[in-house]
Image (cartoon, rainbow, N blue to C red; front, side, top):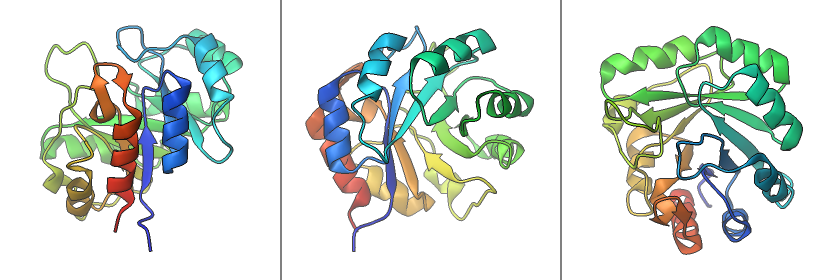
Length: 215
């Protein structure tokens, strides 16, 4: 029987990679709305791509410390299934966003060492899902998508009230080991399936999903 690991491919910007992700079995596709990111996409382009996503695949919008005006415009322009908050949003802000937009909210938490796990406990139960990502280097422009991994053993045996997803430096070559070490049931990959920064490769997408879902 195949693994039931759910895969999210984030930072998609063209129809060929949407198609590759969907055909390979991705459960989530992510669009980045953060101008500093090389994966940033405009609302109208994301709306056109979202319309091509097959039913049953969750369409996720990644934002960073977005205010209500930005989220209002985003949710009106793009058909979405989930909001991913990837900045320094407080638990109170997570609750506000959930209430205002009526969409599930995933909160990203950066982890570098054991002390950072307390943040996961803080947001568990407030966010609908947790994204456990590698903490960005000090002074980095991007809160995620930096191709960095963290010590997966920190997560071994851990459980939270909310479902969680593993991110950070995952590639077709290491994703199976990451799943084995952490017990992750969901993984999120962006830079690990790119042939150059911001440019996804359909073959890498297929290889990553195959590796993540193989027994």
